[in-house]
Image 1 (spheres, helix red, strand yellow):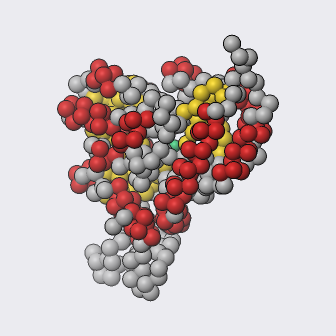
Image 2 (cartoon, helix red, strand yellow):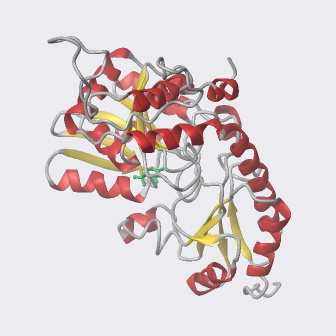
Image 3 (tube, helix red, strand yellow):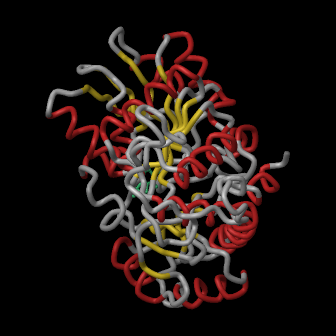
Length: 386
Ligand SMILES: *Cc1c(COP(=O)(O)O)cnc(C)c1O
């Protein structure tokens, strides 16, 4: 079944009592036993809840995984995943990962729970050099945030397989419809469902999907033991959001293409970062491993931070806000907003300059979005012709 068709059926078989088309919200903490030791499949909602299960089964199926857990946030998904490993495990993490991921890795490292090396994983030879005998896992985010660098998952998976280490992919920027890390060699996939999967900026949520049965068992155990599971109403909202994911992504991507081409031709723009542009260094790999280029576009303006802030102040449709993947267009300044929690040295190493702006391109009409950017860039500094 095509994923678009599968998504329209998400959760439909949940209500065995009245056959409701939309799954009920089982807003309950516990369940009555029929007899000592006999339940109808659920005893306590931390361990399992029918609304949450409908979402988890949908996510596992979309991803081609063995199982999934829905958690309270993307960071809860990341914390739960890191807790799968024994104390002292060494991780190799993409050097330009999500700021909150870097912060949590460093927090756990300070507490002696793990060790981490941040490496530019767009260069497979850098990964080969960073692998140590005590390395347990490699943590990849592709496309990366905010520069949309592309990491070659085939090349990374070949190295992790050879070294016998776990490959974990944060697939938040693309969703299972545009990239399937498990089929490219990943063992675990992590999401902030806050972004494209829910898509309506009204839920903070996360998920972990396991490729194989043994990892799924460990993920289920750890999620239940740690208890950061998503509530029934949030799961219901995410499930509802998921049904329109194929439609939304099509519009996000068409608009992002138009925006990237518009910005690339604008004299006030110093650089554009969008994997769909043939000039993007990761374009060929993105074409091979992704089913689309997504809806995120970053760009740098001439005139430094002041010029970037001025653009941020002048847009009307692009709302100045963090987060991404919702139906509405957003603009943000990574150096002072989404990536403010990153150490300045790490930010510099990741190439996140002060003149950089990141767009989450929404599903509005293309002409309105281009007109908004044109007006916001009207007074931006343009360098004199050489
Ligand atoms: C937002 C985000 C997270 C964190 O998710 P929350 O839902 O905000 O906790 C992790 N990874 C990536 C790539 C993100 O964009």
